[in-house]
Length: 315
Length: 294
Image (tube, rainbow over all chains, first blue to last red; front, side, top):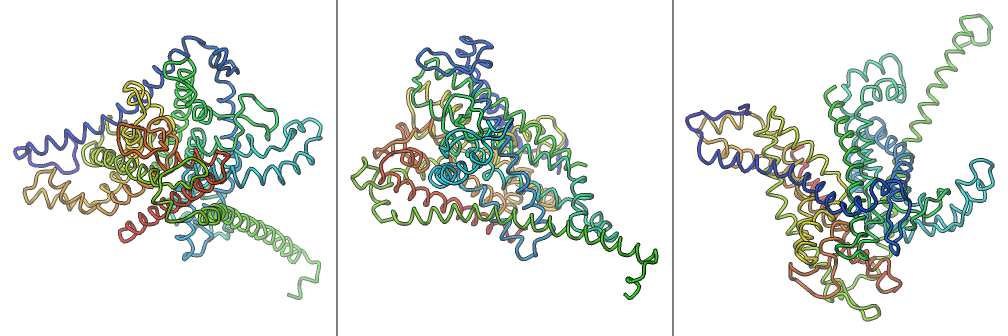
């Protein structure tokens, strides 16, 4: 048995056996936990999968009166808000990571790095409340009317920016999500940028490269895989975010054509509808089925993220 | 250089080279400025959130908040039951989750070298670290709430414990791996069995790091809302029973912030101020604990 330090075989004590058994058992418990989460959500959602079959994945109905439930709208909302959040967050996160690793004066790195990490520590309910009371009025009064006037009449893409300026909606949710995932992506990028061997960068500087050229030609190619892993990690976070989104997305089960239109996500729909779903009802089963789908989606994204980060670390 | 005025070919080369390098340096300056801007944006959001909380939360802050329970709108309620509920559930969640996380981290660092099981456990633990917390709430609802007929503080604590485990696993494994092999060898050479070497030598040497992980885990679960919605539900009455629905600060914020009553919204801001500064203080403390080692 491969061990870091092997105790002499004849002295293997009963204490050792107990301790190793406990530790291994705890490890197995983690696997059991994951299996139990998947299984419990699947079994809980089974009545909905039985009642609607494949239609659960293709229907955009959510009608508690007629008891017809489909998952298209929340899945669409989940993916669209997360992708938009990534588009907003990645450039900012990259800028922060670049600044922290290459540009910042040494005495500022630690405090600014800590501040960015604190942004990740703010609870999501706070983002939701802050978004609801501060960002939503700001969007509704200034940003949205301006953008709707400016771009709403454009031929071809104008429909993306039309509609009443409620302040809430898909775009606002994506903005809040973007702010929330910036620190996760920035921290991962900073850590992987620091793994580039100094001699690579020094060689490039020695050839006369500017800081940005060193970044573009040396650091990014060297860390590409891990950087993708960091971005996927941010995506995984955004997909399952609940409280922040619930406050600001407008909570309508309809696919809006405008980015300012209201919508919902899997997590926000589950959080909002759960209190009105009695135990044993088809609605509760549908919510659990949605939870199962969310788990599958985020598991895949997080698994890809881990594999990218690990293979990046080995390279 | 006076040669610049002449139109000979070497000097033209020099101006071209000059222009090219100026372009490159300008591009560099532009990117540097954008990066500074990005950092400023990130910091601005943090400051904006903290300033909002201080501005709107501090004005509702009074002794009554800590001594009175939540009451119907208009009757000067406080947050006592929410604060106590949060402390109980966070404490119990940490107490349940930490030993399990510690053992899993120990298994990964000390016993799993090269084994397939170890790789699988590490992978699953890392995925759970970022898994949506709302799903952990739904999971605990299906196993602890719906079969036993009711929301309870205990179910809330268990949901929080599930979130604690992967956080403690990650820091424990990382910290144990930093302990030099020579220390373990010294212990074993003195005749200590392996478990004693781990518990009395490695744990003690890695204590700062492990404590950091536990502090970060407490900070994380203290602000969790989604898992509690499905497990401890929230309770507007005074209750310390773990078998009953239990109040907590994040769930109270959720209930109050969305309400149409001004005094409830004000209390939600106070709760938000308390929870955010508590969580940030724990994070800063965790970094101070770790600093001497790193």
